[in-house]
Each structure stands twice: as C-alpha cells, then as structure tokens.
Length: 363
Length: 188
Image (tube, rainbow over all chains, first blue to last red; front, side, top):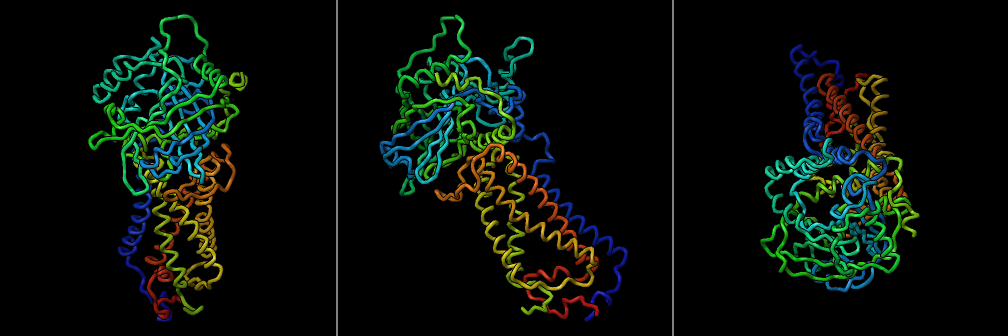
C-alpha cells in the first residue's frame, strides 16, 4: 500500500457523481441551516431590526438619537440603600450604603424635537454603578401597566398609533382592530387612560412594569416589580389652561427643580404572590402585595444629551447585577434586543443636537 | 507521535475538533440571536462566556501550533493547493482570535459591563467610544461571515480530497491513531 493513490482504481462515473453530490449536500445543508438561523429564509418574521425600522418609520429617522424615548435630558446622583433589600436580593446594591447613578429622563416616541405634552409617556432610566464594577440598568415609565403583552403586539401598536396623514391623529379604527386581536390590551389601555397624570417629571412615579426575579444570599427566589416613588408631592397636570406652553415645558420644569434642590424617589419593590402574572406586563398586581422600600434615589445634577456620557448608554433592562434576573416576560428579551439595535444604529451616526440644549440645562 | 507521522499531534487533533464544535455553535448562536426577540437574552448570555472560552482555546492552539511539528502535505496537494491550504489556515487562526477580541472590544467601546457568570465580569479592553463601538460591531459581523465562508471552503476541500482524490487527507486529523503505512499517500 506504499503508493495508495496510484493503485486506487478510478471512480466509476456513478460513484463520482454520488460523491460530488454528497459533498455538495453537506456544504449547501450547513449553509442553508445558517441562512435559516439568520432569518434570511423568513424575511417577514418580526426581528429586532424590523421593530427598530418601525420606530424609524413612525418617528422619522433622526441621526444619532435613540429610536424610542428620543427626547430627554441626562442626570446623575446617588442611591442610598437602607438595607431592607438585603433579605430580598444578594445584589450588592442592597447592602446599606451609597451607590453612584447616572440616568436619563425622557419622553416616549422617536421624535427628538416633539413638543412636550402631559399625556406623553415619561421615562426614567437609571444606571447604578455598583462597587465591584457590576451594573444595574433599569428603564421605567410612568404608566401603571404596559398596553401590550408581546413584541408582536407592540410593533402593531406602533403602526396603529401612527398619526393619519390627513387628520394628523391616529386612526381609532386601527386601535380597535388591535385590541380585537390582542384582548389583553383592552383593560390595560383602560387603566392607562384613567391614570392620574402628574404635573411634572419630578412628581411622577416610574414603574419597571416587567417582572424580575430577586435571588437572595440563601438562594430564595422572589418575583418582583419595582417603582420609583417620588418624594415630591403629587399635583395633577393642569389640563384646564389651554394657553400656549413652551415646547420643552416638562424638561424646563425638571431642570429648574433639580437646580433648586435635589429630587428624591424611593425605590419600592413589590413582591408577587404565587399566582400573580410574571410574564404579562398588561396586568397589574393587586395593590395589597407586600411593598418594601429599599432606599432613596437622589438626583442632583442635570445635563443635556449633547454633553452627558449618559447619551451613549444603552439602558438595556437586562443588564442586571448578580441577585437580580430576568423573568419570562416576552417583552424583556425583546426590549434588550431592540435597545441593542437602536444603540448600534445611533452610535454609528453623526449626532443631531438635542432639543434640550446645554444652555437650557445650565440655566 | 514521531515527527515523521502522517497525523497531527494528538493535542492538535483534540484542539481542532473541540474548537470546530465550539466555533460552529458560536456562529449559529450569534446569527440566531441577532434576529431573535424571544431568545435574544438567553443566547447573548451564552455567547459572551463562550466567546471568551474560544479566545483562551485559540491562544492555547496558536502556542501549540508554534511548538508542534506538522505532518507533511500529502503529495496529492498541488503547490497551488498547498498555498491555499496555508492561507486558509492563517485566515482561520486570525479569525478565531480576532472575533472574540473584537466582540470584547465592541462591548467595551459600547460602555457595557462584560458579564461572564453571576457577578464575575471582565474589564474593558478599549475606552468607551460610540464611533469605535459602531465600527467594531460591524467588524464582528463581517468577521463572523468570513469565518463561516472559510469554514465551508475548508470542509469542502477536505471532503473533496477524502472522497474524490481519496488521499486520506481527513486521516491526518482523525482523533484515533491511523497506522502510518495505511495513512500515507507518499508515492516515491
């Protein structure tokens, strides 16, 4: 067998074709699986990129700006833990002590230059910089529940609430059709419509809405949702006076209050009972659930998106420290994926200037 | 294993097949997660530590490659095929080192914590920089496609030699020992 290749009889024509086909099948098969995994064979499937496209379609394409919650200001401050959270989660942030934070207040929607309006959804995003280099990022809004349960419904809602070209308002028929397809949205939208709206960012309560898991030092697991409850007293939004309001009136009021004195929110953790839904952000938990006040968030600095490092932070709600974990809520993984899309897109673009300028935040 | 063996050293063969499995899994996890809404988080949580594992193995493999004698090319490989084989080997080594480094760099530039398991995380390897994040993110995708195409070419070439030329090229990398008088294709 010293000259194996020479002594081999030539392959028959049939055998040669068969072998070539086998090689082709392996290569095409693996490449096909890869294309399938990448979603190239299902171009109409909903992907993170397609939802980011929907935001660009609805809000317009604004370079360098978040695809949602485009308008905002950046803040910084601290979180003082009172130690009450230690029993709930082993995350080091709940040990008594101080954690620096940066964050961002925003209005929902993809238009960075839209005029502030009282019923526009308000957002508070916070990045807690834990001592050992871990981070906890959370993006909360001032709604009691989320209007939709799944990313599919969310994408349809974005399209349905798009202002009609002729009337300039969303087409009510589209909303009705959406609610018919996703019945869980009807009670959620009712709760959202009937919510009391506060006058300012400073006296708004911001909710995580999605459920998370807390794991404590002995491995006990709890299902939780959390809220930032303002120390600033509630005042209703003044819907009666129809006089002209400044385009940035909500942000200007926030900036003025932070310059006057630091603003405070209590971080309150609601703990689920065994049958409370942990994968459905459209359903509120009963109000009698145990609530634990775990510490105080103090915001004492405000900066424009144009100058703050918080502009280049992705407030991905699944960047969690050890001791906090995701639930099976389908919105959570989807949010993480879509935020990442938005982040990568805007970070590669030249930045449009913020509607709330550095001069405005310095006043 | 003597230097006149027709097979790669055992350590090289083990590293080859282990990394082949990890890299192929990684390519599929990567391409699946970026188009997935529901499984995105779960897959990213695997992708990051698996990427660092591949980086460590790739460094070990590079060192192993530098200190190991290779079996000679079978005579059935033409000079041009030998050039292509060498170039694609270099390409594969470069990519399996570069892909995890670019991924690590891209998370660093994007101001992300680089979480492995639990509270264990890695430091940033480049400063936070938006434009750099965008460039590295794109490079990560391009390198991954390049790795996949090079992988397909590599598999195609080895299968062609093994099944059509029948020069037992695949035996050089078999995990089990092949007697060299059977494995050799030396003709002179």
